[in-house]
Length: 193
Image 1 (cartoon, one colour):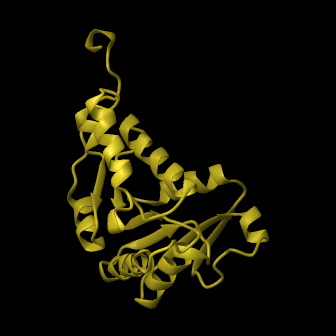
Image 2 (spheres, rainbow, N blue to C red):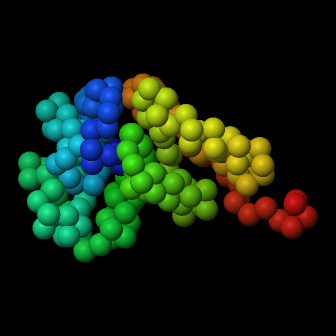
């Protein structure tokens, strides 16, 4: 695992633990020699994790659409800032560059990006692990939903294991490094209804 993409909020959220987790994850990535791929912003948890990786001597690749550069939210201290035309281009390049994915606390954008990338894993478009850094139970509701959707047979049990979770950055990274993805097709046949 050479690079991990981290999705997270462009705000800090309401708890100091969110910022602390972003900083700790950034430091842990650098210590392990894992490069950070992220949305290229200088605000909120996005800017905090990039700064933490850089401060610990790690490498950061930011990917940001021109429209956000124009709004002056691009992190100007990055060694590798890639400016793309659209959000679709951003997500595609981030996925291509990364070996695994983590979602820190965030809002709609974080959730949308993480769910899309986990779906790509489920569909077999790539074979890359996905994890939630469940700071102070932030993702408990999402994890409960995934378990419910599995119980209701909208997600196969094997595919439920695609989304890993831990509340400690180092433990989550270890899970991502050692996880073996299921080799099961997504489709459930009509005879299995």
